[in-house]
Image 1 (cartoon, rainbow, N blue to C red):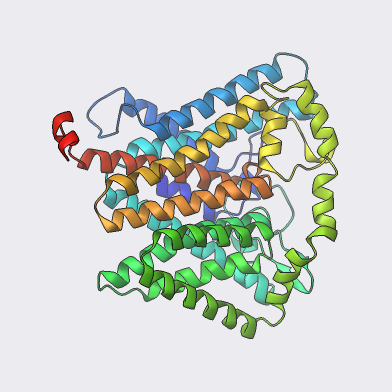
Image 2 (cartoon, rainbow, N blue to C red):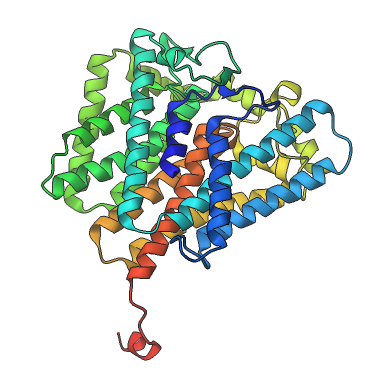
Length: 424
């Protein structure tokens, strides 16, 4: 069922929402809410194999849910303009749809084989999204225009393909090229994990190397600083955790990848370099900081719980291209602390798996989860990540997957008596 959620999240264009519902709700959000209902029903019985009991990832998800409810109650206790009230209503539904997915994955994916199915499916789906973006970038063919689903309506007229320098900036099936780039960056650690895993186990690894190349190319052709910084951070995390031989292979492969890109797409590497070389005079950077003064005023008025998630409308107050700042404005200091705690708990859960598991395959998977969630945490600082449905859905799937992996490994690790532990 989590794979069905990912299918809807990644394969249905983000601009398509369910017809006949007043608020703009995507099929993935509806699937997430259904997962939440199923999870709740499973908690009422003991015969369906769903995990129960404490788990740090599950606790972080519950705390995040409580903070969202508190902010929603605080924001709606008094009058709100109709557009802001509609934004708050829609946002609370969307947020709980993704929270339910994280909890369902954390408690419902009970062994490594099932977690592998979920993460492999996610990686391949991101590869398809990257391929759709590559078609948009290279030949201006937008496949998403033909991905019409009965019962859905578009909230925009066509696909989201922008331009930077002389290049098209694709969005794939996501809502924006920046989100597309970050989604592709999230997929890189997992594609690399499954490629090396297949190679080291003697299986055919060609399909995973191809998937890795397509996803990495998708992150680069997004022409997004967020994606490039995410790739660099994810690469640093992987290089720190990988053995020495694999580090050398990865660095050589990365250099070859850049050479091929430069030959196939002349001018692309230079454009990427200019994104950072001219960062001080870039109008897009200046535009992101112009609204900090108004954001500061809102924070001073509603510093504890925020003015309400979904009430700070970009067309009304200006964009906030920083999720941490946006959370501070809309959810207050409590919401910001809980969000940071959620990111840290996801990475901590995977890091704990690396500390307690003797299995190198499991340790490598945990490293990939750490790298992917580090990309998410960095992306939240460079754009309003939780405003975009695809990136948000993947964020909560990753937190849930980290909790599920920790549950599985802890269940397999024998608990030693205190005396024996001290002797060891």
